[in-house]
Image 1 (cartoon, rainbow, N blue to C red):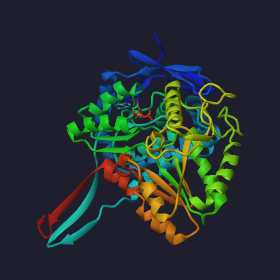
Image 2: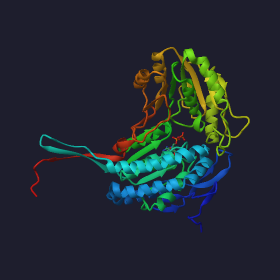
Image 3: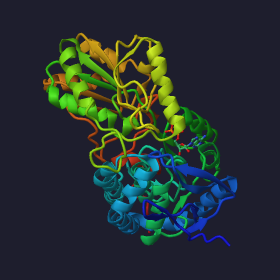
Length: 490
Ligand code: ADP
């Protein structure tokens, strides 16, 4: 008999390869192999959910709903704050497993991602307790806005920052009073499995958190099509979003989608050059596998030479290699399939006439899934590399003449997730920021994110906003209760 409490050791940490449904580990009929992108080794064989597993998870969540909702924000907050504490106490383990599983930098996971994950849970637990629907009197009627839990919620997350991005959905969904079914990414499923152990340790009742591991087209598709799912929060690619959106449309289920980007990173001649170069380099973080990355560098003509010199010099110092080592700045791409996709973009860009100023292909020194940080110059106007999201360490460089052109080029994209502007003039920062069409615009900074702020994408980069009260607008059924004043006799 197979022991469902069995754990596999990943980087010295015990992780379950099974589903987590109704407070128990569950074996599926099928499995899939999970590889480490660092060296291509097989980490484990994971359970792969089918229709019956997904149904069991959704049913368990459905059964757990009334009690979880009835706890109220304060009762739920106690569990959630315990969960956040447990996450923090396990920071080293989470970071180690995440790095082994998706190749992201260990230091970044340890010092930023895990802390942020605990904060995601704590912040929304606190926010739910403070959340007050407005109330007002008008024409003899008293109006009051209520944030009601909306029921079983599906959370579908990507592999580039699985633990952090999952908690960013888990926090508000649970705080809102919804039980959840999480579908972790099949290319990096392990830290989500740890989350189930933490939930159990926090005493979260069975059925409130369920995890269905598996393949997107099977487990994910079953989940979004399940008739008892009332909300879908998705982070991933625009192509998958279209499939999920169609499924949701059939049942009029609200979806929140945070998708890809082709964000501009605009540098004016009056900008602090060193700050601009440093932040531009950050676009290679996580080997460019970041939806927010400003992959189109747009630089004012007069500083072209100076910028390219400084940027190339510093980019060449970025060390590629094992993401567990301190001095490493760029790790591997997630999988062979993704590596081939990135290589395909780079080869086509070269064929279209773009020139790599540095990089331009796989790392010969590292081999495996390591790809050189790459900057394309002389990019033809209609080149694919300016339009499609690569999701790798590949940037393009273009110049602009003036502010108007910078804005036009910045907005010349089907996407609208983020935009960055570097300038020495405050009014210009404001002016340009207002004209750029993106969910998030940074001026003289990059990646600053506050959980109160609405977050999401415009155009092909998404639907809806999450963050602060916006998260509750999505995860709750927002209701207006109106009663006639003076109409109660008892
Ligand atoms: P990426 O390109 O970043 O891998 P995907 O959109 O393919 O992005 O994957 C993001 C998440 O969506 C993953 O958890 C994946 O399993 C899931 N997914 C993929 N296809 C589907 C689908 N048809 N229905 C639901 N979820 C899916």
